[in-house]
Image 1 (spheres, helix red, strand yellow):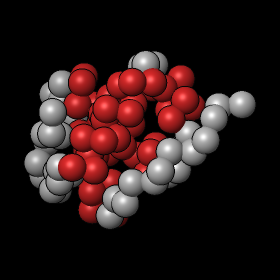
Image 2 (cartoon, rainbow, N blue to C red; image 1 turned 180 degrees about the vertical axis):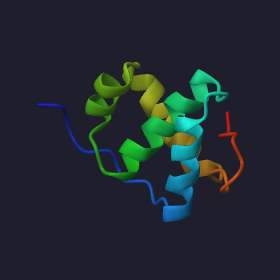
Image 3 (spheres, one colour; image 1 turned 90 degrees about the horizontal axis):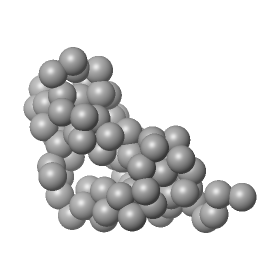
Image 4 (tube, rainbow, N blue to C red; image 1 turned 45 degrees about the vertical axis):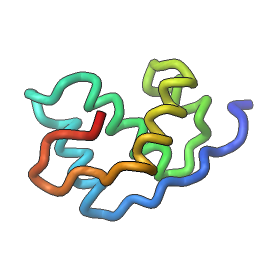
Length: 84
């Protein structure tokens, strides 16, 4: 119903923790929180269309965020930024 699964991103436990910290921080910019949610769901193997529905963004946004994450390193623990 929601199309093929996204090609899973390889995300370490430390990276997931850093992304979750971004999502929890009250000072994180919303675009970074959105990207963190997309990356975590993609790492879990959720289909791109499903991610778009769950996060409330367009499919091109999900695809862009996933491609960007494959090219750039994820933030380290304590780094509240996620690459643009």
